[in-house]
Each structure stands twice: as structure tokens, then as C-alpha cells.
Image 1: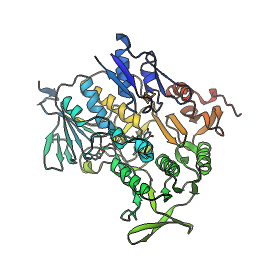
Image 2: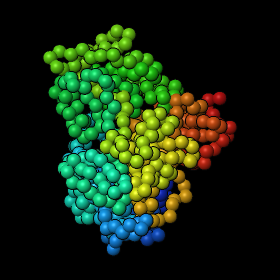
Image 3: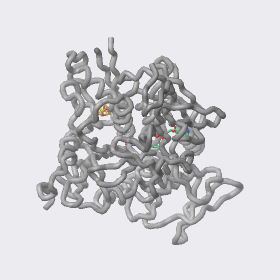
Image 4: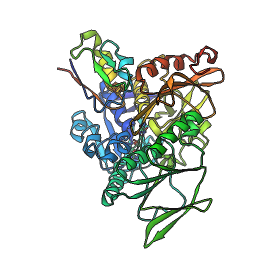
Length: 65
Length: 416
Ligand SMILES: Cc1cc2nc3c(=O)[nH]c(=O)nc-3n(C[C@H](O)[C@H](O)[C@H](O)COP(=O)(O)OP(=O)(O)OC[C@H]3O[C@@H](n4cnc5c(N)ncnc54)[C@H](O)[C@@H]3O)c2cc1C
Ligand code: SF4
């Protein structure tokens, strides 16, 4: 799995961090998403998918292959 | 394989009516969760599902091409075996026969019906037939408004309604060089939701940017010349010259097509579901009928009432919960905490919970004057919401206090 984020779309909602704190972080001030791990280990896959699903800005893309 | 549902065997698809954020998220979550049966997605707009929040921000400002709001292409939906009926309106439902009637004359049988019809812009009782009077809800609305703004440099814009939408439109129009007046019957922008202190901060922000605020006054009529609006008349007699009027006085849930059915519709009162479809705490409105997103008023055990929200994240969260019900999965333990954001000029407001203008309010970090702050709301002795700007991470950390309903007495204050 490879994760891609779009910082321009991101609205800083932090749903990704709530869902997958090992994979996503937010910048302190504006809350824009930062990737901690763009090729997460398998145990993070479910949480990463959940983050992508929850993101209200459709800013997270998951490439499954 | 036919599904066995209360004794009735059915091959019928899940029918999702409304192809906005909530409808799309439902479809996505069903497929992601392994739903193998049919799915039909019915949408009145001809556009593929798109995202609304950028409409009053990046799209109106012109920093995003309109195509960028598209959430999913029709091809991608087809690849996920979703039968899309776009440009078609649902006109009625028969929950006993489990069918939905569409504007093209067809009747769809459903295994389960998910109502995701959102809300439409509330209109004034007059004036919407005049050229230059706009509402902002759909992509076509914003494209029309943008074209009108682009036609005229330094247009005089009157925004009626200083809620989130009105305040955002005022900010963008001002940034584009328009002369902007913002009118509201309340004394402060956003007052009913965010209260006096945050409302005053927002008012100052708009004043600093050169917006003329006309607060505490309602509009009584328009003046028109050859079919086009020329001025807005306020109740104290002031006439505000206008090339363009944006009416942003709220939204009305799109439930009319279900009136007269057994599907329960809430009363108008915001304390009682604000006219949405009444659902239990997992979105069920009746046998095999669910509702999600702006149209849905879910029972909130935390609030002890039906709550209808118009927040982008709620659309997704509703969709997740309902899809779990439809997939027969166990319920998630934690009820979600509502979240919304609003961008005005450089200010990015973010909030968790359900703030209300009548709540107690305390700044716990930073200051409102700097517009970098975290503030918390208290209701009935509990932390009910948190809001902030320029401190996104700190705001998220306070979310926990909202989730657990922390005692208001434990909230320290930087000002007291
Ligand atoms: C301009 C604007 C800015 C916003 N900004 C923010 C923001 O900054 N932050 C935030 O949290 N939220 C914001 N929101 C709110 C957010 O966009 C909504 O909560 C979200 O779009 C709700 O999704 P929905 O799918 O429930 O409804 P909608 O997006 O309204 O989708 C419903 C769809 O159903 C269709 N439909 C209606 N009736 C029928 C019918 N009978 N048959 C078939 N189809 C039908 C409609 O045409 C529409 O396409 C904003 C909303 C707007 C309009
Ligand atoms: S959930 Fe989406 S919008 Fe929110 S911080 Fe993460 S990427 Fe950004």
C-alpha cells in the first residue's frame, strides 16, 4: 500500500490523525496533514483506509498495489 | 444470492437517493465493506458527485477550476458496479411496497433505501425572480454567481445572512475587489451558533477588510430596474445599492418528495431535528429506510434530541454507520463528535461538538484579538464544544474533552 496526500485540498480536520496516528500527523498551526509513513506496514492498512474514507476533503488517496 | 430480509426474499438493490457527499460515501462504504449486491445511485443534478465546501471558497475565488470539486467520476462508479441515474429526481417512495418512483417514469424496487437528498437553499418570500439575486448551494449556483462577479469589476454585493455561508461569500467577494455589505437580523455574525465573543471577532475581521456590516436589521424588499435588482431595502429604511445580492439564510432539508409517506419528518424546530428525516441513532427511519447527511435528523443520545447537522464530516460519518447496518456489521462503540470548519480571508475556524450562542464560553489558549486561540463552550455543566483558529492541533486535543463531556469546572481560563 502506498499513500498519497494532497496538502492543498486538506482542511486540517485531523480525522486522519484520529484514525491512524502512526501514519498521519498535522502541522501545529494550520493543521495541514503530514505523512509520517507513505508505505505503512500491513497492520496500519485498515486504519489508513479508514482515514481516507473519513477525510472530509478527499485529500488522501490510497494506492492498494 | 438473494438476500433474506424479514421473510421477503429480494434481489433488489440498495437504492441511494441523492448523489452528494453523503450518498457517495454510502456507496463507497458499502462496496469497501464487501456488499456484493446491486447499488443504484439516483441524483437530480447532472454532475458526477462533487464536494460543496470549496464552492464558497476556492471555486468562487477562482483558485480552483470547477472540475476539481468532483469527488468521483461516473466511470469510477461504473467500475464499482454502481448503477448511476444522474439528472433524474426521485419523486416519491412507497415504503410498504419498497419502491421509489423517479422523474423519468421508472419505479425502482429496493432492498434498502438510503435517503441522501441533502438540503436546498432557503429563499426569501420575494425577489428571487429578479436578475442578480443569487443563492449558493449547487455548483451551477456558484458558476452563475462567479460569472456575474467577473462581468463587473468592483460590483456592489449585498450578502443577506451572516452565517457561515454568508460570511464566506462576503470574504471572497471582498478579496475579489467587490464592495460588500453584509446584512443580518442578528447583532453579530454567527451569533446564534458561536455566541457573542467569537461573533464580535468575526465582525471585526470583516470590518477590517472593508465590509460594511448592517447588523440587527432585516431586509424588507428589493428595488429593481428592468427586471434586475438595483438595491436592497432594510427595515429601518436604508437602501443599499446592489448589482448582486446573495441570499444566504440557511438551508431546507429536501424532504418534500417523501411527504405523505410513513417516513417520519421532524418539525421545523432546531431542537427537534430541524425539518429533517427522523432517524434512530444509527440512521434508521423505518423498515429498510435510512437517511444520511444534511437531510437526516438522527437521534443523539448525548443531546437527548434529534439533531440535524449541515457538516461535511457528518455526511461521511452517517454513511459509515448506515453502511455497517446494511452490511450487518456490529455497531461502533463511540458516537462521533461533530466537526466543521469555515474559511474567511486568512482565518480558518475549526470546531468540534455542538456550540450554541447561549453557551458559556472561555478562551483557554491564545487570544481572540490575535485570532489565534482555542475557546471552549460549556452547556449544562459540561464542555459542549471547542473552537479555534491557528491552533489546529490544540483544537484536536480538546476534542477529547468534548467527547467525554468533561466537567465545565475543570476548564481553566487564561483570561480569568
Ligand atoms: C457552499 C457551501 C459551503 C459549505 N462549506 C462547508 C464547510 O466549510 N465545512 C463544513 O463542514 N460543511 C460545509 N458545507 C456543508 C456540506 O457541504 C454539507 O454538509 C454536505 O454537502 C452534505 O452532503 P449531503 O450529501 O448530505 O447533501 P448534498 O451535498 O446537498 O447532496 C444532496 C444531493 O441530492 C440531490 N437531490 C435532492 N433531492 C433529490 C431527489 N428528490 N432525487 C434525487 N436527487 C436529489 C441534490 O441535487 C444533491 O446533489 C457547505 C455547504 C455549502 C452549500
Ligand atoms: S482528515 Fe483530510 S482534511 Fe483532515 S487533516 Fe487529514 S487529510 Fe487533512
